[in-house]
Length: 367
Ligand code: OSB
Ligand code: MG
Image 1 (cartoon, rainbow, N blue to C red):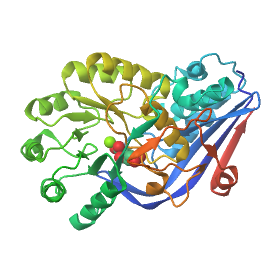
Image 2: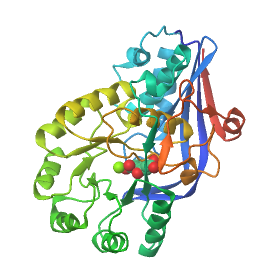
Image 3: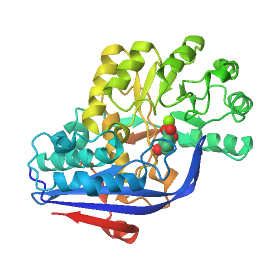
Image 4: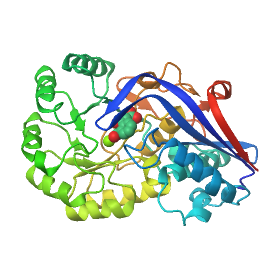
């Protein structure tokens, strides 16, 4: 397929409620969408970086810069065989995997559409409906958190993830566990702790959590290994895993027992599949995380999560959990605690162009 035209857009999309993690919060997403055109078809991708460099060094503005100044001028006009080849000409770029992932995944959507198959099938997935989880940001009070957990359990979510930070952890989680003795609970610290907090983290071991996600620094594998050695709760790495090499290092050092794969974080589907395959052969369970994506990014995540190694529910929640109105139709919903993998070609949901135009704050085109 020959990439005839590329459109880049930044959208402003307000969350239904503020989402707070240990290192910051967001109320309105600044979403970067990529669309690739070939042979009368359009492939869509979403870049998942945040508004500020707290989760990763990438931001909306760095993604815009990398894409408009380096990536898209090199990609437009390209003849692409296997979809990941679309980023071949810019493999020399160091990092900026979130910016690149939006383009790589758009090429997969385009290729699946041109081949007449669902995206999930194009990348090797097979499961038709998946149990999914929800990620709850830091709340003002424990009671607010208890209400949220209760509501999401009632909606049928199969995994409840709560954000934690020092001072908002052991006591708060004790109350949640007391109230919901059997619930599938986990926590995510987004790197808020150090090895000095080991005594506190060890107290989490008694709470029956499925896992503790990214307790320590994003770039510290050795300390995660030391912590995992002292805790019986599995550690799951998120920020630390940017590529297959990171997953191999983490497995070798026993820095974690579970990996959260976000295709938007690792550069797209090719790297996600590599990590998935490695983890499967290493006996390491994986699940698909989220980055507060719009329906476009969510569709990509859902396709990835339909692969066989994804044995734990992902942070792939209903559109309604994030937005008053999503930018795709139909919106993503839960039925019986599961999310249906779309059966249409490509991402299987239709970006609502009128709505997208109405919330576009800047755009660029390459042809
Ligand atoms: O650490 O998983 C994270 C959102 C933004 C940045 C980092 C994270 C998250 C989430 C949200 O937990 C998951 C979702 O999209 O529902
Ligand atoms: Mg996380």
